[in-house]
Image (cartoon, rainbow, N blue to C red; front, top):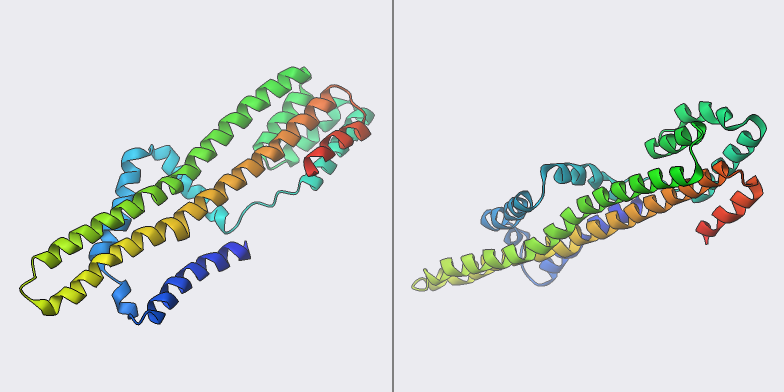
Length: 246
């Protein structure tokens, strides 16, 4: 679990609640069913119209990564690649075949299979770079779902506020209802702006960062496997891949 992300999310709610109390309002004032429906369900509706089902499904699958991101250890990956290089020099490329089933990452398995099959270095690079680009684009599209939610929710918050003020204007004859009505109208604005800036946009940025880091790890795999296919010395491979750690 990523403790920093968890603390950040909790702190976001604490800030809103504490700010409300310090401003002299009550916690009950933060709850408004109509504003919730307009902002939250309205944002979901907008995303359903804009986004294909497969992208939404992938976005839902990526959401836990905000709080439990994969551990990207470039140094460990480089060490494994150097080990594959040393093994291939001792036993030939077929000596890497047992390593294929031991790998959990399908991208790495595919690369090792191409290597064991005796594919040319440029063929390995070409195939893996196409898959790298495809996977990266799929994940970036999924992360943009949260970015789009952060774009829609403030606007829907304004819509909710305007609708609330419309209801207030219809009760101008009863001054006792004006204060409560105006306060309730602006709750939608809080929902919309808070949802965008405290949750959706930070989540989108975090997921994009994880996608780029994953792509960097896969670039290391590509360079390493191509170098092995070219017959480069294990020390040369290690020196080349160490550049990614800088």
